[in-house]
Length: 493
Image (cartoon, rainbow, N blue to C red; front, side):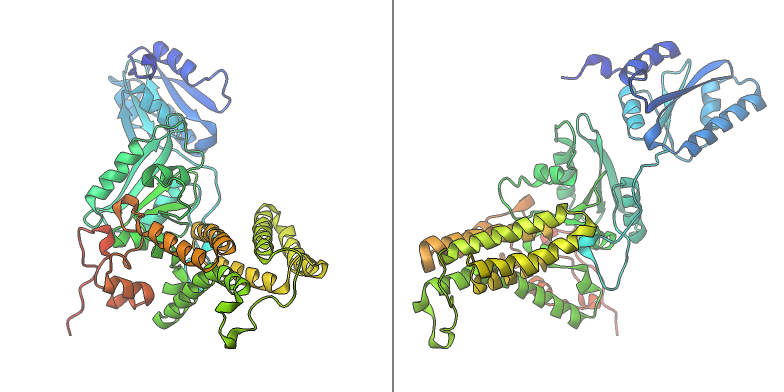
């Protein structure tokens, strides 16, 4: 329940407004909240600002203009109108809501309070601290754009607008979080994106009742798609503006959250998570080759360890030509347990590498590769075959473009290994069947997760399997239900 005192409008009394703002903004407690008072045309004027989020040069220019206006005009019949007409800024709005004005100040804007008026003037002078656009570490390309999203929502919307100069591009901003009031922008092209889907996403965002979005995009994802305990990613993250713009042209909706360098692309399917920008920066044949290698690597990394464990523990399943598969020497620790320990060791090393300072990360990798694995074999804890196949599985996982999908596949691999260890061939087949059925029943935002495989869409599946040339793609993907289905009209001969 909101405090009634926090839903009031401004009054015409400057001193009354000043007392309320003094208490609500904590001017005597918060060092970064400030007010600059002037007397213009015999009227008290107050400019309220947040030092850490504003550009001081803009405020100085506004102050200079107001002071010079007072010295030039000497008197004005309507001081508020004179201040408004001489407010040196390109983006100015009026409001009589104290809640809205305070929220804007805490977002980096300023408002000008004039004695005798029950409304204020708001100007956008934000200058958010942050880094410049850089190429994302997880989405590098050999040839292509090197800019990437940052933690600044203003920069991010600008990077998107630079690539989409369509007058129908809509970037609707709203504030989510009862206390944090985090800026969230919904980007889509009107006339392409499904209006019902846009309304659903905006409705879900407005319905979020939480103190703040400290984890930004991930919190928004969990509210929108209701992921629960499912490890598989139901939205796609990207830090590349060109990838986001491509999806917007197709009819997807992009959600930009302030303080996060990743944007959320929705709706998505499983196959969106195994595509990479590098495929579209090379020739179609090269892109297809890279895509197929990625497919093979992902499937190989998921199945190689549990399948080898199945063959190593059930030699009767091996044909004579493959009788060399298995363990050449016996150890005291069972093979399945060796694999679990090795998988856990690689996972711990991966986590250690993330938290290790960059100058030491290379040394950590060398220690892990040269000493730990070799010494574990020499001591007798692991066999060489276990280290080999676990390493091959790890390499394949790192080839997955989506970090979230890679983690989900690692969890799935643990499940397959345990199923084989406890139930043998039946466990392997049954676990794969359960995995397939769990993916079939996933429908984030009522979109089939395995489209275009299920439901079967041959043309769309062909474009998934083969990186077709851009001039040959006429239709937008039907999974997003685009209003304008035609992507491009073929040239007449």
